[in-house]
Image (tube, rainbow, N blue to C red):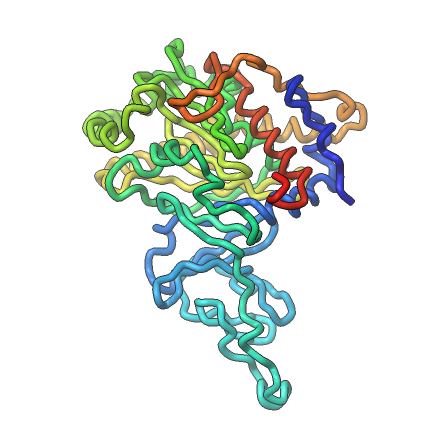
Length: 422
């Protein structure tokens, strides 16, 4: 059953039906039309640096294994045995030359080929064509700034086209220094009883909640001086295709008031300005979401995360800490511990956010509650396209401009049965 979602999102009025956060039919349509077609983040190259290194993840609810084969090439496959559909690799990460199914022992090389089948000659009478029963690959795979993305749809546009004008903002997050970034400290995973879109749209650019939801953290100055001082700038920027970035003013402080971090940021500023160019004199990107479910934060902490859907009212959060490869070890360790304190599963900021997302999902279950629309009209009519910033930009730093662009893209993709119609 296909739900007509066009009546559920009214961008012109800034209205949003709460049905989209709880109804199973809508969720199933998301899995089919968004997660089975869009480019999705898999992992960072530094997580699989050598031949045989692998990382298991999800694209929607489909399990996927990302592996650098013995020749050094990065591939991604459904983490599903072709024989009876068992999950093939049970480990989160590691190194392997082959993957062997625990059910019947079918074995696959790390380039996805079916390598061995028990009882091939007697039980199968040597009639099974192993070349046709390798692991199912993703349709397209590509990288940007070390971020590995994939899509199940062969008709999807190339990754660079899909990213569009958000690429410069990704450069600020992940390529501001020579050598780019690396992941440190593994991955934190936890489940929140909320719809995946709520945290995704929060990272799109919800600066409005900070002074209220995070008041205790703000008062302790944990989040840096910019959270307790009047803002002097900052814009929301919607670059297209549902990708959204929230920025600070170019001279606004955004880092924790930790001496080694402040000294490090001051020391690298000339290099960063040279690499990023004059646009960095206009805005300082600090949080954002790539449609549909990859988000990043570079002020306060350095984290990126995936909002894995686990049903209409459940999200599994995967959170990584990233740092400049060229940063000194003590700076990397400081960023890691700050990220845990603020945005780990028990972090000060994270606890506030999870409570809000859960409550918004719970109220949407009510029959009467779903008759009312949510209001995302803040700043409506007060945004313009900015040629310098390459996106639709708000006239004021607090706005729901990005949220409207995110949900407009959600509606477009959900209402379309192919990329040709988008």
